[in-house]
Length: 324
Image (tube, rainbow, N blue to C red):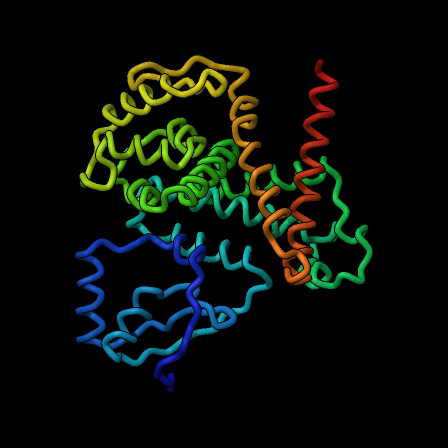
């Protein structure tokens, strides 16, 4: 017999943001069901942190409805993210925007997991935490990383019935939404819920704006005040806003009825616009963090991520040199 009661569980913002938020009607219905029938499904947890069941946890604690918990074993955060994304993608009531975002997040998480595996496919998280192991235990060539990413994109594409290229495009979409969320968190739920329709190109353009620019634009098109904003209106206002921006950061926004012409410089331009945010984050971490107090685990994760970034930068520089 399952024992029900109350527990003090942690809420991880990143995990919670991966789960589709309930509408007011859905939340009210869930609350009514819990009052009438009790909490039938357990709260899924990992190391004392909620993985699934955030709404039930909040309602049950507030109304003193006992619940059970089910602990799941994961090696690292990325494994939790993969599970949450897969679980959410199995639901029928998610929007297309949420679907693209979750596929992109799952792809990025699985790439990280793949990086910490041996050539034999054994998980390297345990070795990753052991700083006594030589760096060569994590050595993976640029070619191997790209091939691993390609295989991951193909596998997820087959699973979710999209092309591998679409999976990689969704990853860029999810990254842009995460950047938007850091600058103006209230925007992202409106986009993922489908209340605000905006193209992939405009999502990227918005993510490259400053916080003040985004807030100014959102006030012009009524984001946050209207339940549904016309797509053509957002395109027009976003295009107008881009025209006002400094000449050094041109972003071409296609009209709603015109297919954008192929621009061989588009990816290079997008990366050029994105890099300043990376360097800014790195500089803030270097100058404002008390690195002596940062945990060994966090430092190792950052070292590995910076190493991967450094390798990808070198591979791109080499490719540019070869083609020039």
